[in-house]
Structures are given as structure tokens and as C-alpha cells.
Image (cartoon, rainbow, N blue to C red; front, side, top):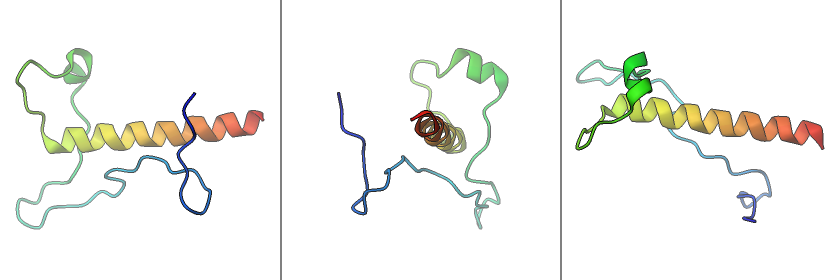
Length: 77
């Protein structure tokens, strides 16, 4: 079994990516957008390069779910 990733202070070291919604000064686009439902259903196609906003959205969502699940597990202890 793997060790729980911890920070130097002993607190959990959760993955963190694109936690803030930021608007680009040049193209005025936000740094993350939720992918359309169809893309969620089928995923990336071979050789497809997904928009950075979709990758940022998914990375942030996964990290938030990990932290939530971890906190719920701690409540059960």
C-alpha cells in the first residue's frame, strides 16, 4: 500500500491544479471550461489535442473529488 502524500507540516498534500478561474488578458478566455456532454461521453479521439481549458477543468474536478472523498473517509474513522 502506498503512503499518504503529506506536506512537510504533516497535512495531506492534495493534488491542486487550476483552482482559480482566471481570464486571459490577451484572448479574454477563461483558463477552464467544462467540456460538452458528448465529449465527456466519448473522451479524446486518437491524436486529438484537447483544449487546455478542458484539461484544466478535469484536473481541478479530479483534485476536488479526491479531497472530498478523503475528508469523508476521515469522518468515518
